[in-house]
Every structure is written in structure tokens, then in C-alpha cells.
Picture 1 (cartoon, rainbow, N blue to C red):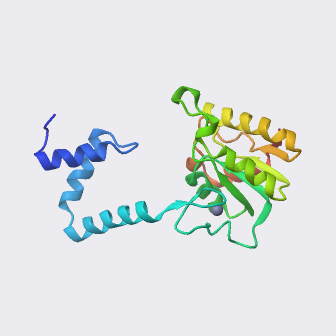
Picture 2 (cartoon, rainbow, N blue to C red):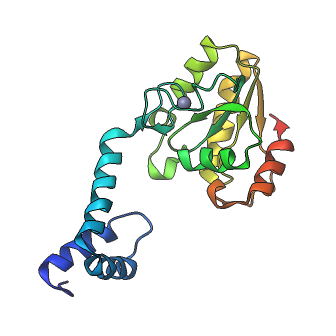
Length: 199
Ligand code: ZN
């Protein structure tokens, strides 16, 4: 549908293809952007391109980072014997914001979802198991979301790790069912971490 001029239409189309942006929001954003000074729009475009070209996965934990190994993995004072498994970098950021977790992370970059055709091989599970073999790991805390996909993933991982003898725990409920970790306040996150249960 050509609701706007050709170029405006193209912009709205591009914006509405982004996650969480419907056609209404896309229209609003496009309208906002074309009213901004060119300089500002250029800075935005540059930062998107710069991030796209220079951000990649940490070689150890698979979070998004600018360097080969992320600041958390390269921080000597972090406890490397505790690994918290999260679905994505935003969940890692949510726990980092609490400032109370001193272990390291493993970012799956997704969750198992048979409905969406995402299987165990599509997330960074193999990489997690490799880490568990080579390091002196005492505990794996599974902090996937409490959605169906998150729970499925948690169950799958715990079954996989159990035979290794490494302690596996799951963050406590208190994180609302279906809730994305990144939307939950820090106190609830901390409570969920402190109240974790053995699997
Ligand atoms: Zn890392």
C-alpha cells in the first residue's frame, strides 16, 4: 500500500520489518526521522553500521562484544567456577545491572522451541558442554526465561549436565511465568538467584 511518498513508504516498510515495530510505530518513527537534522540521522545510521560490522560473539561465553573475549570473561576477579546460562545478551545485562552476581555467563543466543523449529543444535549448547569439559566448573545456574521455551531449554540442559556430576540449579520462580528477564526489576532478579533450587 502506498500510503506515503515512494521514499517515505520504503522507510516505513524497512522500519516495520524490525522486531516489535508495527506499521503505526514505523510511521511515527519515519515521520520523526525525516524531521531531524541530516547530521543526527547520519550519526544513527553510522552507529547501526558500526555495531553491525564490529560486534560479534565472545569466544568464551557467546555474548555480544566488540572484542575477541568480552570484559566479563577477561575479568580476573570473576568466579569462573560458576556459570549462569541465559538466553541472550539482554538477559546477561539484566543480571549484570544488579551488580551482585560475580560468576561468569554462557549466552545460548536463543531457546529451544519445537514450534518455531529451533532445536538444541540451533543454540550455543554444544559450546556450553565443551566449556564444562575443559574448565573447573562447580555450578551451572540455569537462568533461561520462564516461558515454555525457557523451561523446555532448562529441562534439556539439566538432563545433559546431570551425568557430568556438576551441580545444576534453576533460578527460583518469582520471575513471572512467561516473563522476559530483561523486563524484571533487579530485586526480583536477585531473589530468583538467591532462591535457586537444585535440579
Ligand atoms: Zn565472554
